[in-house]
Amino acid sequence: MDFSLSEKEQKLFERAKEFTREHITPEANELEKRNEFPKEIVQKAYEAGLMNLHIPTEAGGPGLSLLDETFVSEATGYGCAGLATSIMCNNLAFAPLVIGATIEQLKKYVEPLITGKDAKFGAFCLTERGAGSDAGAVATRAVRDGDEYIINGLKCYITSAPQASLFTVFASTQPELKTKGLSVFMIPKGKGVKIGHIENKMGQLNSVQSEVIFEDVRVPKECLVGKEGEGFKIAMKTLDKTRAGIAAIATGVAQRALDEAAKFANIRHQFGQAIGRFQGIGFMLADMGARVAASRLLTRYSAWMADQGMMNSKDSAFAKFFAADSAMQNATDAVQIMGGYGYISEYPAEKLMRDAKLLQIYEGTNQIQRLVSSGIILRESANLDTGFHVKYDGKDAPIM
Ligand SMILES: Cc1cc2nc3c(=O)[nH]c(=O)nc-3n(C[C@H](O)[C@H](O)[C@H](O)COP(=O)(O)OP(=O)(O)OC[C@H]3O[C@@H](n4cnc5c(N)ncnc54)[C@H](O)[C@@H]3O)c2cc1C
Picture 1: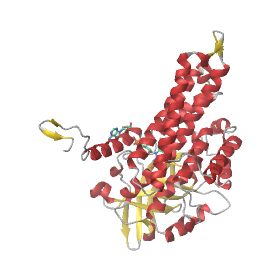
Picture 2: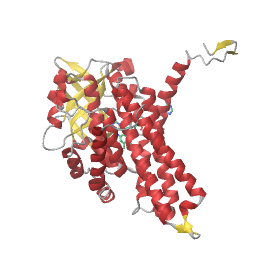
Picture 3: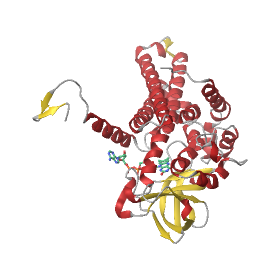
Picture 4: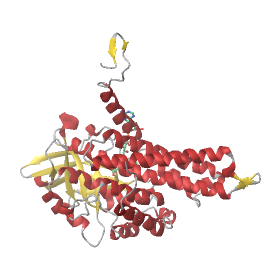
C-alpha cells in the first residue's frame, strides 16, 4: 500500500494550493460582501486549468481522474468553500453527461463550453420545491412530440444557474413509474428557459443559486441522455462520483479551521501562557487534527475506488457525511477556541462555520448519506459469517 502522491498528482495539488494562496484566500472575505457570482476568480481558475477536469480527452477535456479532482477541491475549499463550489460546479453539472451521453453528444454540447477563451457553466437541475431528498417526486415533465421533447417545470436551489449555458435537467417521462420514469436531458439556454428567484443564503456567499423555470421548452430528441427512464440510475451514479468532491472541499474547510485555531492557540495568552497549553484546548486541537486526517483518507479512498471502476456508493457516502460533519465540528471548535475573535466577521472562523453548514445539506443531506450507507451495510450483513453462531428469535445467526 502506497499513500504517497505521484509527481503529477503532487504538482496538480501544489498548483491548486498556490492558486488558492494567491487568488482565493486574500479575496474571499471581501468578495462575499458583494454577494454575487465571483466571475473574475472563476475565470482565473479556468485559465489555470482547474475546471472541467473530468471531461474526457475525446470531448476536449483533460480527462483527469476523480482523485485528481479531490486535490483541486481540497485546496480551493481551504481558501473558500463558496468559491470552490463555483469553480467545481461544472463537475456536478456535466457528470451525468460524462456517465450517460455518447461522445458525439459530449462533443456537440459540452466541448464548446470547455474549450473557449472564457469560462462557461453548466447547472445540475434535480431539486424542486416538492422533490429534495425524494428524487422520485420530481414533477418536471418531458413529453415526446415527434422528434422533440417539450419540457415544463420549476427547479430550485440550482448552483450557478444564472451563469449557465447548459442545464442538465431531470424530468419525468412517465410520472406513474416514479424514479423509474425519470429521464435526463441536456437543455441549452434559450427560449422558454428562465431564471427565477435568486436565493439568499447563510454561507458560501461566493456561489450563486436560483430557481430555473422551463416553460414549453422544445429540445431535439438528441438532448435525451441515455434512454428514457435511466435518469434516476444516472443521478445515483453521478452522486457516487461527485460526493468525493464535496468531501474534499469539506476536508479543506476542516484543515483551515484547524490551522487557524492552532495558530491562534499559540499566539493568544491568558493566565500567563499560550491557551494551546491548556489541556482543554490542546485536546480539541488533537480531535480536530484526527478528523482532518480521517476525512482526507476516506475522501481519497472513495475517489480511488471510482477511478478503478469499483462500486463506491457506501464509501463515497461515508466520505461525504464524515468529512462534512468534521468540517462543521472543526469550524465550530475553531470559533470556540478563538473566543470573541471567533465570532467576529473580520476573522476567519465565523465564515468557516457559515460555509461548513451547507456541506451537510447539498448533494444529498448527511441523513441521506447515512441512509445509503446503512442500507448497503444491512444488505452486506445478510451473507456475513462472523464465526459466532447463535440463535436470535429462533433463527440461525450469523447466516440468515
Ligand atoms: C446552497 C444550495 C445549493 C444547492 N445546489 C443544488 C444544485 O446545484 N442542484 C440541485 O439539484 N440541487 C441543489 N441543492 C439542493 C439540495 O441538494 C437539497 O437541498 C438537498 O438534497 C435536501 O433537499 P431538501 O432541501 O428538499 O430537504 P428535504 O429532502 O425536505 O429534507 C429535510 C430534512 O429531512 C431529512 N430527511 C429527508 N428524507 C429523509 C429520510 N428518508 N431519512 C432521514 N431524514 C430524511 C433531510 O436530511 C433534512 O434534514 C442545493 C441546495 C442548497 C441549499
